[in-house]
Image (tube, rainbow, N blue to C red; front, side):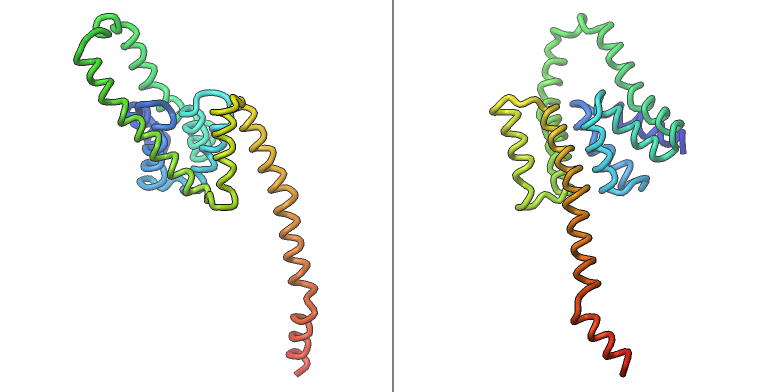
Length: 202
């Protein structure tokens, strides 16, 4: 399992272009569809946690997934597998960049890669929105967040803190209040109790 997880994330790190968000389709395909190490909803939770934590997004995701699979040893293997290809490639580029930075063929290759990177980032965005069960009642949250960052210049850190706090309050108090009200209604319903009593007596 450790070797397999290292090889899987090494492949993901080797063929990912455009940063951590472009890595999400590959992670989803390998972890959820191919190896079935994690459910799709659970992966979405991991991605949400990785976005909220400091550090590189791709490393955070790989560390969380590795720890989910094999605790500390799994986290080390998946983190190394993700970081090693980027480290080696960036080191080689830094060593030889001056030799090909003005090469017309290389420049044309990067111009062709850019649109593909946009698609790689757009696809997981829509998939995450669908998995997050965004509906008419809560679609205002991403819209307001995007407008606050883009138009008003609000820090993304503030948006993350506010969203996390709001979600905690909703889960801690509102959801529990609804559950208690539902249990209270179901238990104390006179109609239901009376029906059962009559059935038992007859």
